[in-house]
Image (cartoon, rainbow, N blue to C red; front, side, top):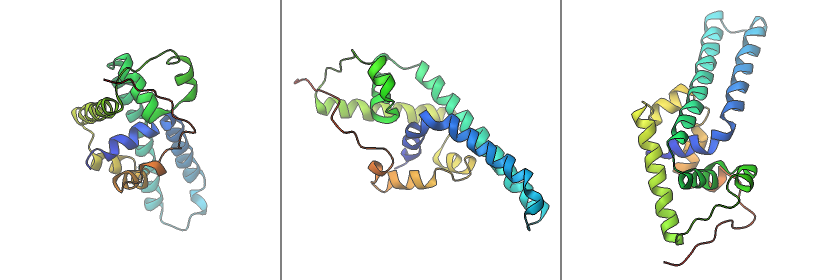
Length: 169
């Protein structure tokens, strides 16, 4: 599916800042230890530049998701938090009293519409799956292929208990 990269971005969103920082530290370490590397200086410099570009892309994606979330309704924010971000403190704090009054079928329709909205937002801002994988230096390629291969449960931790209650239509 062409939206697999969008799911990967959304699942990774809570950690994108830390991932970007780790990639930056990796680039710094490669630069500092380059004198030990038997490869040519040009190939080492190219690797370091790829990591710097990947860090910049990851931070840009984090900012892009932040901007997208500013445009969302409270219900959409809850749906993002519940399905993709899974931050327990946010769910227990900000959304503790939030009630989603819909059937199970409507819930999944809302999630599909929300994913479509996010995919459109990324596309409007110039992000495609190809650009995502290229700009992030392939860091998320296994995540995207797992989602595309129907193994989305391997990407995120399973919940211990069901947190949603559905109302009947």
